[in-house]
Image (cartoon, rainbow over all chains, first blue to last red; front, side, top):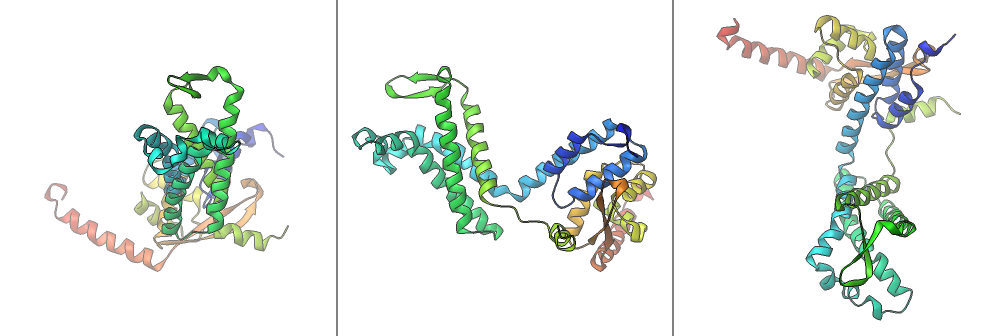
Length: 217
Length: 98
């Protein structure tokens, strides 16, 4: 027989399942439920869950450091290109895009810089995967495609909100966002992070595999 | 923290999982340590090879979740002995604490 008092907060359980380390997620959840039903309050349960989630996030950063390097590189590279004018020397089409036939000109204008930034960031991801011994060409290809899809989605969805854009003086073809640059960097970094997460699948913990073998569906 | 958790695992023997470990730490060290911190310490000890773990049976009072039992390994025992010798030597060299 269970009542509200004996059941821990379901949102806290959901948060724990998605944020705590995979290595001890199930055991920790069981321990928290056991202790909660024995003697503890909902406030205690939430405190434990938030602390475990923070530890889980730090553990994830430690394990997937190369995802974060990929995201940082991807978020910062367009700005480096923009301010140092390197792109003009590396890729001459960037300044002569209007001479190209449509739709290539449109692609170069809209997606040329993100595609080059994603390619360069992919080098960082490759090095990280090699160091961690998880390198697969399929991971790189998948991450690259997902990155371009997500960046395109973000890039073109901004056109739905024209009041967010303002003209750039001296450039009649481009507009810039009115939000501070740091938000754009964070949005771009999050997009790269999500792409790496989806593109490079996680390695399951041995205990989970053992359990799946022992308990067939 | 890792030393305390390792010692508690040795003391608890076959019943060393999260809940009794946290209770032992509360009684012996008079410290309420979060279960997340205990598992993080156990994870580090396991990666160093000082403890090994195995899953128990899922039980209804734990919401159908299994217990993860920990057991100290031979290298864990050796590390504890070495730490004890080192700490004793260090304590002996501090006259104010004699």
